[in-house]
Image (cartoon, rainbow, N blue to C red):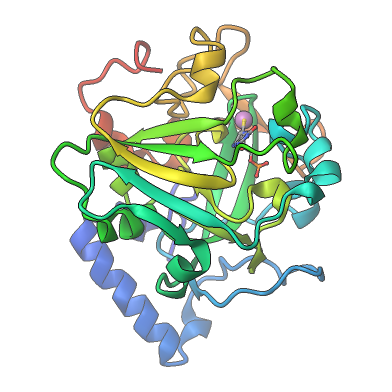
Length: 317
Ligand SMILES: Nc1nc2c(c(=O)[nH]1)N[C@H]1C(S)=C(S)[C@@H](COP(=O)(O)O)O[C@H]1N2
Ligand SMILES: [Mo]
């Protein structure tokens, strides 16, 4: 499989149907022991750590063929203001979070709602590895081998009604576990939202792992959102509630600074942040001076541009 500009595998730009059968084919090839014929997009051997290894399959068609950022950078250079505002704070402070056992509430416009043990949900939710580009609104980027599952697969199990137009996510509010929630730097708890079609897009995943292991606290354990074509702040961490809503939900960074952070937050090199350009990005782990151009929709243009056809991306930033 050849790499296209932007590092997107060609299988990602075929129609969903072709794509799905192609994915089944790949799964078959893997099962048949033909894995050696596939391109080597897999992450490096997971580093030794005390975190539990996970069972998962490799979802190559949805992964980019790029070398993942070192584990130390993904877990040592974080934004998680519940544990402090410096990039090194979450790694140092997030040990106070207790990600197990964990409850997840499903609420709002759906036939099935309630509060569930995350363990029970995960028992029936197969995991995949997805190697995705990650682009923070602060103009730095990584390549991250997540382990998780499609958000849409989970949402469908709760049978959203026709009034469900958006999905709202909420982080844990517990200042004892998350001491940063005592500071008024942001309104707490952290909240985020997606339009229903964005939430149902096959690229949108809920993440429980990293480099083949259970997600470290500082990266949003035990459950966080990843929407790879949007700025990192959409990827809300340590989620306790998912609600189907009729109205567009608020999102924390938009509440904090509405002129600087929108609801959509699609990665867009042509729409600068009011205080800096978004045309290029600093590559974390590539040396302090490593920069590369930022790609439209973070390189996922072929998959997601149709979601925003006819929309003024300067206005809806
Ligand atoms: N609850 C919560 N989720 C959050 C944040 C946060 O401060 N609190 N920061 C966001 C931002 S700005 C980014 S860039 C990503 C960082 O994810 P990472 O630390 O795993 O790279 O998490 C996002 N999710
Ligand atoms: Mo961010």
